[in-house]
Image (cartoon, rainbow, N blue to C red; front, top):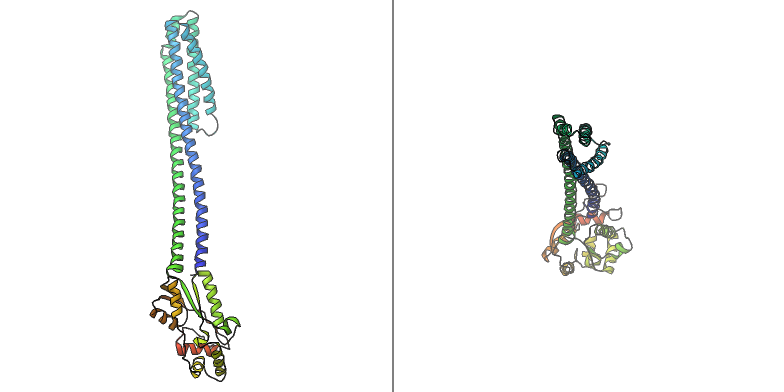
Length: 366
């Protein structure tokens, strides 16, 4: 698979994972807000319940002290406590709003009823004491009816606190679990993003640095520049440039026109090919070898670049053999495409039959 394809896919996947992790972090933050709200509601309701219980006890204590001692300061304190009780009654009314479960709302109603009944009994006792019925006032405040109402009020307050605590703690745990879940999902997605990034980075470094793609291309003025159809040099060069642009690597352009015989002898070889000789026989007829190319310069180029291990883009087994003799490890070979046309079929067949180039010619071509 091409590096560009892999990097494009990896980029798309990392963008998706990054977006999903951002969404997960947002959901985690929202759950954390709900968690904080649950804690705040728990503290508020617990504080209100505690104030109700303490307020009821303080009001009763001041009323009892007044009817026992007759001191004016206890009456004043009882009156102040009644004012605070009314403020707490307003808070109780606020608890009757939406969002309160029916069970808690029912207990709140019981708290309100018991508080009003207790207030009436205590207010009547204080009024009786002020009117001179001291014994009746004491009997009322220390009697079983007052004890029953006070116990009922405290029990209903404690019941409300227990219900509110259970609900807010459950909401807290649920919000905390959601927050942790989304945070863990976000972390996993970020970890996957990092793994993909490092994997692609390793792959690119391995392909471009540890095992770069190399094309050794011998100069061919007629094919590379003028687009001659007698050979496949021009199309191979264009293919190599496209592949190297996509994947990275090195193009070594070697001054070895006509398999090392030079431009003018190559043109002479063309005339012999027109008379029926193949490309290799024409070179031999002119006093040259079938292939006079030497890749020492190519090996030196790679060594100068610090490259000792490559993937070779070529169909020519001689290139691989020469490079390995010169100290360059060819770990892999990649074939080029077959660039066949009606003018270069004989040329391609000679490459396959005489120098064993790795070309897969179709039956129609051969």
